[in-house]
Amino acid sequence: MKVIADTHCHTIASSHAYSTVLENAKFASEIGLKYLAITDHAPEMTDSPHFWHFVNMKTIPNELFGVKILKGAEVNILNSSGDIDLDDYSLSYLNWIVASLHEPTFQSTSINNNTQAYLNIAKNPKVDVIGHSGNPNYVYDYEKVIKSFKEYNKLVEINQNSLHVRAGSLTNCEEIAKLCKKYEVKVIVNSDAHFAYSIGQVDDALKLLSDIDFPEHLIVNSTVERFEEYLNNRA
Image 1 (tube, rainbow, N blue to C red):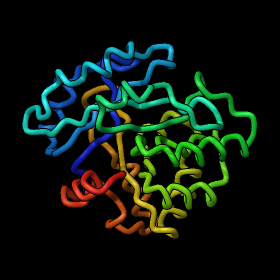
Image 2: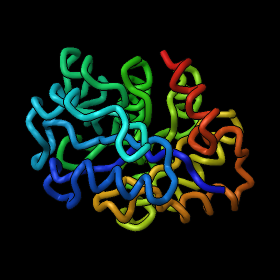
Image 3: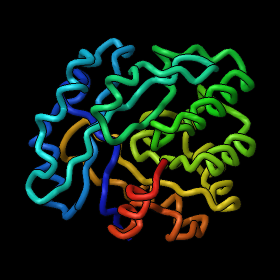
């Protein structure tokens, strides 16, 4: 199985990434992707772009090299109340939002604190994807939170990059995926690419799902039809 969309990637606007929008889109086209989301870090990350970057994404064409472009952000979950670092004005210019916990912007004090953050972000109708929640620095009550993601129609990300850069993520991601399978929670498989050639390269994440016999119909970006159904029916 291959994915038809990669909805978590970074550009040189996040200065720890190394490719442009055009370079990312061109490579996405070369490998046959139909959709690509541009999701640079929101402003509370130290190397993130100014909020003007997000409100000005309207200047990017909706399609590049035959790939449909989603204009988005990877917002930071800032606290256990589920606050994020883009306001409604900025979000109104975007059509794809990944919400993640990151060490520079969220202090993990307890499993309960992490759990509350995820329970509250689940209620945010602007958020599409819960990013790399298998991070071992942010262990939470997986069963309770996965049920909440189901209730609020959040996509749970299986993040290729985490399996390599966040030691200990594999075990957590497997547990999360098994619970998504149990409760029929939709997932999305993303690269979290920081260089163009990583776009769509998600073999390890797909293997993780294959190893637990995860149902393909719950992988939203496994077909164009499933992905577009999600786009058309989200909150």
